[in-house]
Length: 216
Length: 216
DNA sequence: ACTCATTAGTGGACGCTGTCCACGTTACGA
DNA sequence: TCGTAACGTGGACAGCGTCCACTAATGAGT
Image (tube, rainbow over all chains, first blue to last red; front, side, top):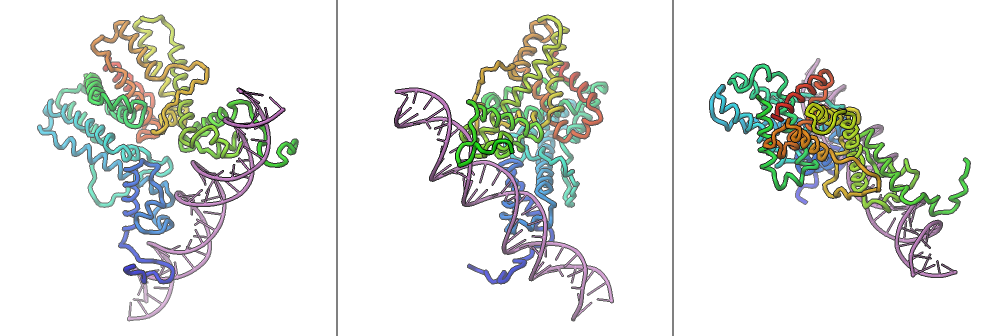
């Protein structure tokens, strides 16, 4: 009604600034994933949200899988940021045993919180299509380290603090990550989803005790 | 070529025995899931494999989700059967500490083996749509207990054998299941999928040590 | 400043999917 | 035996991912 004259004939309606459509598609995809998981990232809908015709997306992504890969990377970054924020809130300088323990707990708590509050994004973060590698698209912004690296850092600190013996340290990040991730998945969309509704704190406490037992 | 006369007009080509179409659709869905995970369970393709028109499926399932739910249940049953077979192979009578430990190990090993050898079915087993409950369709065949129940039984045996103290026992099935499931997911389709290719046995050994530490 | 190749967006189409409706046929209980 | 409910069919629709041909804006090189 206001200005319908700009696209009188055919061709381009109006050109967005450099990379705006690409970023917009990813942002739209993130919102779709937030609401409905990776399957909800539908190319046509994302294009609609950006205000562009579906085919325009093919100028920026080879196919839907490539768009989804970018959305997955963004979701993973949001998870990493959440974890980093969680550990940053813990006071106590590096090497203090109690503080290091609290940081490990904070990492796990942030992980589970994210999985619970943003189930769609959490699922999407791990739904990277097998074909499309991460593409390491560094947009200039400085990101938080990946979950595995953050966990490694805390475990190294626990070793330096003497809480964790050097003998037990190697490779310990894998079973610990597995435990927390498994709990997130099983209680999120998995078979424990009703169990978790009633006794979430109990599950978390048991898991925490279990992990701490695995340290020694 | 042989007998094309049976469906000269319109209507039913030929009627299958009672429940054959339903069972066939589930079986076809299982094969699709085996090859490509839950997203590969496409209603029309399953109907095609059974040799029936797509709409026939709607006489047996309300929608695709309900078919998928049945396929998920079948996949979960196959996983449970695999685990039961794994523990059944372990010799030693109930209450023997060493045998109980071996049974716990066998359960976890079977779980990870199934996830690795049948990634599509494994993913599908945990892809139960949120709307459709399990529907507990007991076809008369006797099934193995669900994974959680099998794990509980072994942990109870470990308690009876004195390996696991009664104090640590309550709720321990959850973190242990989480650990094994998390490892399966992360090394299967997750971020550890290349890591696992080279050092699978190492990951499993570290995880086993971690779980055994959590018992005491 | 003007040209011109590259880039970015449009319009239309195709095949595939899940799902609905109306119809005909078969089987089974009354 | 008959009628009714269960079962399978045919045709249709909208939405999806993707391909092709076309056009308008952009920016580099002269």
